[in-house]
Length: 83
Image (spheres, rainbow, N blue to C red):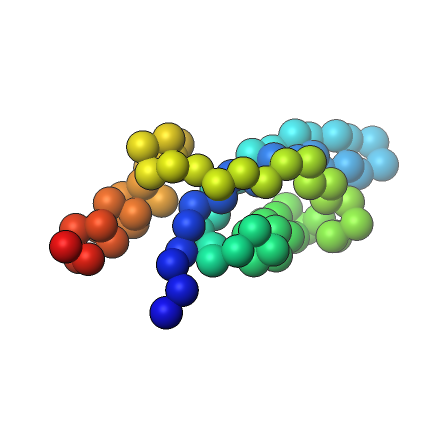
């Protein structure tokens, strides 16, 4: 089984009369999977098409640098289970 990592995806939602920056942390195996997850979540929650979403940066996040409390809790739980 492959190791899952936490990625922080930064970008912008560009609609005709609105530009909204976003930063989202997701759990994925590869950066490509993280991008797909961001597309699906933003499209579902904000009714945004993929071509309106511009991703500027994808970075892997160390466990101590995770900002999202839910993801931090999930990662901490995985570390406890593995030991």
